[in-house]
Length: 244
Image (cartoon, rainbow, N blue to C red; front, side, top):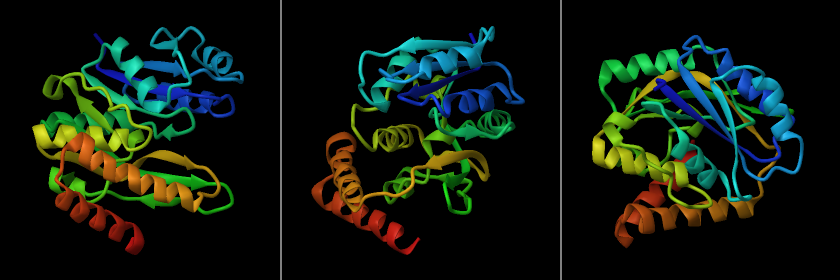
């Protein structure tokens, strides 16, 4: 059994997957397995992944019937995962070398069910932005807005069990964090950035409306909040986005 299982969904990520995998291979903490889940890519994603893996026995590449989306791909990898801790990294993002070492140390110190960290957002043509995070977050605080970047999250299966992400198009990661915190208590955080999130150039307004609707449905259908509680937390969520 390895210490950490890292789940990496990949769909048409030929240009970025080698760098993402390399950032895992460069970790100062080395007792991990990386499960790359190919979600019906139409490009050379699998070939690039195999080239980067080389003879590294810690890396496995799976094919997912699809495309089925990030949540289903991660869950397919989770079913094959052997680690006590489960971490997430998309095929177009990167980790800093000390990421696993620092977060695992904090998880062991605190006994928290989940750990997250700050990160850097990177968009072509714009300066990098550092996203710092608080040192802890409770269930009630997280309901008001998701501060946990999926690329930084690690949860402890000895505390939480092996938990799949809800089958949602969006907000599946947010829903999982809420489910963990509601049952097992507050998460711990490393304020400093430990990962790099790559953003596509430009976001359509329609996507923001769709994301808001999906947050509402997640509150109601997955978390089980009442209508009034959903309105309350969605209002706080939107206020944070407006005034951030």
